[in-house]
Length: 430
Ligand code: EPU
Image (cartoon, rainbow, N blue to C red; front, side):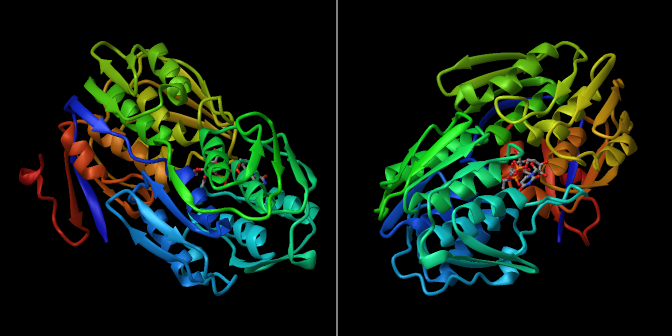
């Protein structure tokens, strides 16, 4: 077990390169199961969720070969089983995509209930199941989800999602890609990773139209062939570095992004007095003056992303005045607030609303990452705080941020990863 030691209170300067999008990669890797050929997937982020998914594919019979650090070749021509071992699937939320992919290609799937980040509440998958059932699958839920398509092949259907769900939208797209007939998903999610999955599948021979709008049509085809595809850059990783600069001050060039995907985050930071200049695939983020208060409500894309809520709340805790944050996607995503208040933040949570009274400074403390984005919030707070902080449970952070220590050090952060048994090597930091 490791923890991060951060000496905060220094502005960040330099350049950071953004990796491939986690939430696209964790869908596209399972989607390779649909392909009767060799897929070359480029710009894969090196994060623990990706490692676990690739291992699961290998256990199912896929051959997986890294061509270099970011590009991988996956050959799913000789899959042996549709049963996914519990040990790995249980660790990651995205293992639910294995159900849609296996059902779509082989008409059967057995996958243990997904694990991953738990925000303290329930993370239902009823909309995924509703979609599979509408397409003719029998689905049994218990410790395992066992799904079987009538006559071994999914059938096109109309599915109206009761809630806008990223996971259900992508899972139904996968189950429908090789189905007999047309599937229409209404009230679909529109996140950039939805479009990325559709583009991946289409480049392998699928026929999916409307991804990025709230109605997606999947015209089932008989076979997907191999090909090459590059994953989009990670909107949330980029937003997290932007928030870090907002909190600490300084100037950082965020490279390798799609500026359009960043608009919802850029707009909020600008309201808070952060300067953001867009150029091609980079954003120059600068904060010299005071941070100003604002209100934030998280919503499905193109709204402000829930996966940036803990990070922006941390920045607002250092803004002048009172800000209101409303969580519009998850029931319970404020568990990290207790940790922030131990660093001096003044935040009151009432249901889905957090009232943030800005303070002048945060101070270093020993805190823990409750989940991936909560961990990112702790890092931002620690970078901005006076003194030394210790962040434990960092395995959550490493589920979704590639090379975070090296990237932060590259922009001047004093951060170190040490074994949990070690004492704080304060003098070595930097
Ligand atoms: N929901 C249902 N029933 C369902 C599915 C979802 O009621 O069958 C509800 C959820 O309880 C939630 C809302 O719908 O209130 C949205 O959930 P969604 O299905 O969109 O979430 P997800 O697909 O499980 C993905 C990301 C999350 C991100 C959400 C929302 C992955 C692996 N996870 O989760 O990312 O918060 O979309 O954008 O793609 C993260 O990266 O830190 C993370 C948690």
